[in-house]
Amino acid sequence: MIVVGGGIAGLTTAVVLAESGRPVRVWTREPAERTTSAVAGGLWWPYRIEPEPLVGAWALETLAVYEELAARPAETGVRLVEGVSEGARLEELGDWAGRVPGLRAVAGGLAARVPVIDMPVHLAWLRDRFTKAGGTVEVREVTDLAAVPAPVVVDCTGLGARSLVPDPAVRPVRGQLVVVENPGITTWYTSVAHACDASTYFIPQPGRLLLGGTAQEDAWSLEPDPETAAAIVARCASVRPEIAGARILAHRVGLRPARHAVRLERQPLPNGPLLVHNYGHGGAGITVAWGCAREAAGLAGG
Image (cartoon, rainbow, N blue to C red; front, top):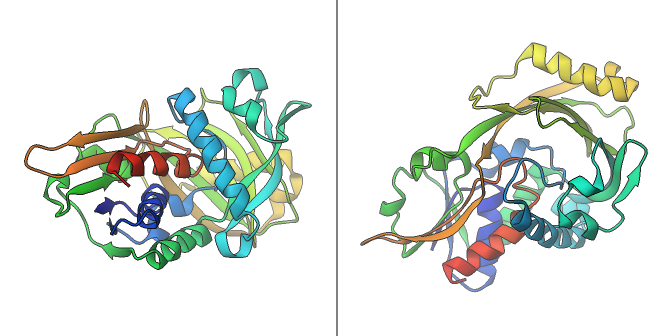
């Protein structure tokens, strides 16, 4: 069995399959540390992902895993962190919200203690867990899923599915972040207007603070825009003024693989492999990783 894609969806799915006793290889166009997943903010929260009823179940299943992994933050990269989603209202969220421990209404929004994942650490941990289960990771590009030499191929190609499947319903939603020295902020904050391509959030990670962000649909540029970066810092500083003077460490851009709905299904190919698709997670691949991985593994026979 071959899993195509080495980001959060691919590696998590590969772990589930390998630990079920299946021989599994991961083929990835680039190492995990260079995938879109590696530049993600890392906050567990269903964001820009459909369909909501299924997403809620996948997200809660993933939350339970992260709560266990948070007991070993240095190893897994997962911590439980308090924060506020400004403008969010419990009645406007799906049924999943009522099952998040400690999620509560506060002045102006909702507060919760939820997982924050240090993505470079977590991806490395997933890869190590996968190889310890007997799996192998190969850096190689796939141009034809039907030609992959395995009876079962699990498609976790994210935005790559647009051309590889091909599936024109997969579209990029560009996210830009600014990484700064943390001036002492220990809580996360989000304020997202879904009708706007700009948002405001900051997420504390070990040794740094991630500032965001943008949600620019159908934008393909991976080059950080200086004006956008300045606007991100200004928006975050309007919430926490100490951010204004924080030293900038890096700029990041990632393209979220958006779709009208996650594609998680079997597709037998005539005279070819069984394809199992697991892509289209938008801005919440981290949030639904384990729920989707387990369902994909079931579809693959794992």
